[in-house]
Image (cartoon, helix red, strand yellow):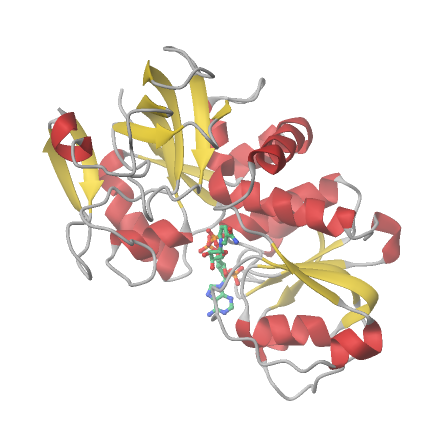
Amino acid sequence: MSRAYLVTEKGAAAELVDRDLSEIFGDDESADTTGTVDLEVLATSVNYKDGMALTGRPGIVRRYPLVPGIDVVGRVTASRASAFSIGDVVLLNGDGLGETRHGGLAEHARVRADALLPLPEGLTPEQAAAIGTAGFTSMLAVLALADAGVEPDDGEVLVTGAAGGVGSIAIALLAGRGYSVVASSGRAEAEGDYLRRLGAARVIDRSVLADDEGGPLQKATWAGAVDSVGSRTLATVLAQTRYGGTVVACGLAQGSDLPTTVLPFILRSVTLTGANSVEAPRALRERAWAALAEELDLELLDSLTTTVGFEDVPAVAERILAGEVRGRTVVRVGA
Ligand SMILES: NC(=O)c1ccc[n+]([C@@H]2O[C@H](COP(=O)([O-])OP(=O)(O)OC[C@H]3O[C@@H](n4cnc5c(N)ncnc54)[C@H](OP(=O)(O)O)[C@@H]3O)[C@@H](O)[C@H]2O)c1
């Protein structure tokens, strides 16, 4: 038997069930018998996407019934893939988990081996879950900025959605690389000290990026930006990015629209690029996780992490959608 959250139909919130494993995975067409690995789940996390899936919001779960959870860290209990053996501790982010394939919010998981990585040395399963998709995406964004040539000496780098999971880890990573980080948050006052502890040099209130009065080209301010908010905020960030700067779009907490013009691109040579944790190819996953294991200050990671029990997941889902969760939430699974 295995406890698992299960979304059984469109629009329904996930239920906590206790079922025979074959009942959960038996009809899993995506989990064919070659190249899959069975896991005892050690830790998982709650991301914004999981909040949406768990509460029955549209856009995440693409087949029913489905176990949500876009992250998993687990111990291999059976392997049909030559790269992994029983007892290995592994992690997986995205790759359809919790969207088109059964995910990590369960005591057991069956995952594809294609994007599965060994737990990096120096990280506990809980720390890897704390990093999770949010931290992986933050590192993808940091690598995208660096690959685009944005260097610490170029000027201030902005992080929006700063007190959230992606934002918090992006601040820690960028500050660790020597960038001067400006954090934009709707909780600038309440979480100002937290954001500065993570490494933000300055904290601004997100409302200054949210109005549409400033026009398509504003005072050139940012050498680069990591945006997990989208919509009007991203349009303002583009309008304020300096000549040759790069902005990485990671999320849509404010909205998926982008009310901008071509002016930042044709008059300031601004680059807008993206980070996608779901489809990231294996080589990029390996590069990002190696960099995370090497660079992320684990004391800072622990300080931005809240650990909850398996039964607490539905309450966290509501809070993350309400923008009330700070940093990352790890779910302890099993004993
Ligand atoms: N591209 C990818 O592969 C990928 C991977 C992971 C996540 N994402 C996306 O990235 C976003 C953040 O994910 P997360 O897990 O970090 O979520 P999260 O922990 O809930 O953080 C989102 C943050 O955005 C800010 N925010 C929320 N509502 C807002 C609004 N209406 N206007 C402006 N800011 C708002 C809040 O920060 P403040 O309180 O500090 O303002 C909130 O903490 C989500 O849209 C998620 O789907 C994408």
